[in-house]
Each structure stands twice: as structure tokens, then as C-alpha cells.
Length: 149
Ligand code: FES
Image (cartoon, rainbow, N blue to C red):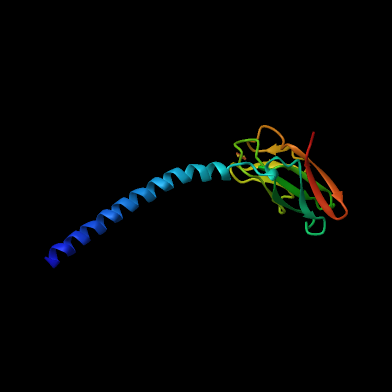
């Protein structure tokens, strides 16, 4: 009799586990799309028109760095003469992200060996167009990069 009761208890436990597992799966399948929807609301930075690229002193002459302006990568360069310029970091060939090559003293795309001069003009390799320029303003010691109008 006691053995019969244990069997029932064990069976009930298994049914409970299956039932709760199913309910948990259902709850997750309902909650997941709601959470995805709520977290996909664009933040204010995505539509930003300007961003700080750090300070003038942080960027060494003959160097560059890639920052984000909204959802766009932007390469900010400081020439050997100390001029600060910014361009879209998206290569005009097949959209790889370009980088600054201090040994060449210009912008380079590693994907297919594309070269751009310090004005963003395509000078060698397959890129068909110059890089889109961005506006640079110095506020105090801070580099502010903005979308060009
Ligand atoms: S993607 Fe830049 S050279 Fe091809």
C-alpha cells in the first residue's frame, strides 16, 4: 500500500515538472517578443547630429581613431601638421571600416587595399568615391564631430 502511494507521488512529481516546464516555456515565448520590442526602441544617440571625439591633446599627430556618430562609424584624423579632420569610416567600395595608417600617412582600407588621402579622396585601389566628410569644430580643447549639411 505504501509502495503504491510512493508510485503515485512520483508520477505526480513528473507530471508537475512537465506541466511547469511547459508553462515556463509558454511564458518565455510571450515575454521574449515584448522584451525585444521594448529594448529595440531607438535611443537618442542613434539620431545624434554631433559627438565628442575626445580632446585635441589625446589625438597624437599622424594618427586617427574611429568613433561612432549615431549609428555611423567616423574616422577622426590628426595630420602631421596638426589639422583635425573627420570622414565617414565606411569604405566607398564594399563598406569595410577604414583605418589610419601612420606609416603611409593616409587612410587605408584593409579589405581590398583601398587608399584615401588626408582629404578623404580615393587615390588608389578599388574605392570608387571619396569618403563622406564630417564637420570638425574645436570647443575649448574638445573635438566635436558633426554631420556635414
Ligand atoms: S571595401 Fe574598402 S577597398 Fe574594398
